[in-house]
Length: 93
Ligand SMILES: [Zn+2]
Image (tube, rainbow, N blue to C red; front, top):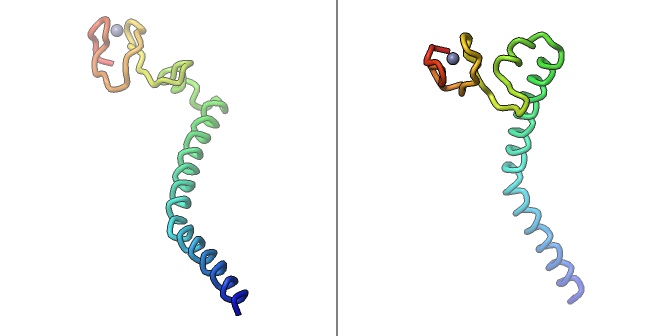
């Protein structure tokens, strides 16, 4: 009889671990989902840039380091995307 009791104990612990893992499952799924979405967005941008259909946009907004910039149309200075006027000449960008 004691052997069966021990088996039930092991089975109980196993089920308990399974239940705890099942509780946390949605978090894993949600995180994987979000990572897949962001990866797909990056990949589609990469495909657009590599296909050359938006080369002018790439040259205008993305530097070699991957930072997003706005180039001043009159003097060519690199400005941040959120800037409204050029840092060096003050003209609107
Ligand atoms: Zn400027």
